[in-house]
Image (tube, rainbow, N blue to C red):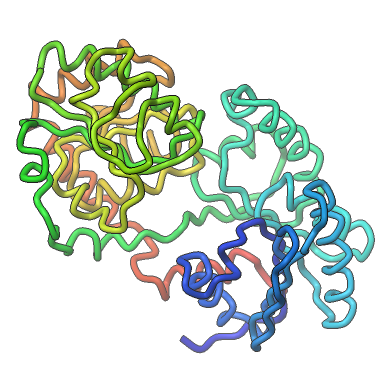
Amino acid sequence: MSISAGKILIIGTDISMLDPNSPAGARIREYAGLFEEYHMVIYTGRGFKQERAMPLFLYPTNSRFYFMRPFDAFRIAKKIIKERGIKMVSVQDPAETGIAGWFLKKALGVKLHIQIHADFFSPRFRKNSWKERLRYWLARFIIPSGDKFRVVSKRIANSLNSAFSIQHSALSVLPIFVDCARIADAGPSFNLHNKYPQFDFIILMVSRLTREKNIGMALEAFSEFVKSFPKSGLVIVGDGPERNGLGFSAKGGSASGGRVSSLGFADKVCFEGWQDDLVSYYKGADIYLLTSNFEGYGRTVLEAAAAGCPVVMTDVGVAGDIIRDGETGRVIGVKDAQKLAGILKWARQNNQKMRQMAERAQEEVLALSPKTQNEYLLMYKESFGSI
């Protein structure tokens, strides 16, 4: 793909972008090909090296202290902007990296492009922890200074427009690209039911094990569900800081201890850790479950839908857009474990209806634009406007 559009500077926090072999590192190199020059300042601790290979320039902040990262990014970016004649800065969130972007706009008069991946203005976001409350207030301060905005879902666009008066022309809705056609066409490399022959019905979760994902709600609902369907299993793929508290081992396998054991069904919950071959899980499960308290988008829901797996999810992210209750899946209120248990029982008893909903969901995600990586890259470039 050969297109070029000016020079841009991005400020981000994902250290894995410095690794060309990581998914994020590969993605950033594709983005760089869209521009004459693509400069990226990344929040890091010490010990990282710069990379300069036209058109991509990567600058780690190598900060001594965490709280110094926005100020180190400002110092590095200010020099780059002056030397390279850059007219626009894009920040990958309206809080941590937004601080550096705000300072750059005030000091140099550059245009500020703000990317928003999380639903900062959901009331559940700021109730999640003191860090989210701080991010919320930073976002409220920084967003009015933005010139252009890229959000990953209609839900965030609606939240943003409810909180601020933003012109339609300044706002782009562009999720992270999911190759739905590839997922739909891919064949599973293993049979999930063969892997777990003790289960006649498998509920799958693919998730980071963090507080906002509310895995505890899933476990509570599942404890009621298995009373009616004792041969069912819950398979969880992922990892995170909540793992030990939930009772999962870093080595995977059946759960032991923690929240799972206290509910009394450890033999029916299997923890897989992070896996590369998610398609085989999606295509082998009977239900895909998401119980988050808030989501900006919910990429795994799209992946599950593309694979033809019926979806049950809380009213976050793509719920109401891609997944509509009773049409393309089932949607329940956030933190309503009792309702979730009832929906799971209904889904088990009405498997054919769930499969029909899954077919409609698959048709919709396959019809989404962009359909290819090249289409997505063009839309990504367009989200910046004229630079």
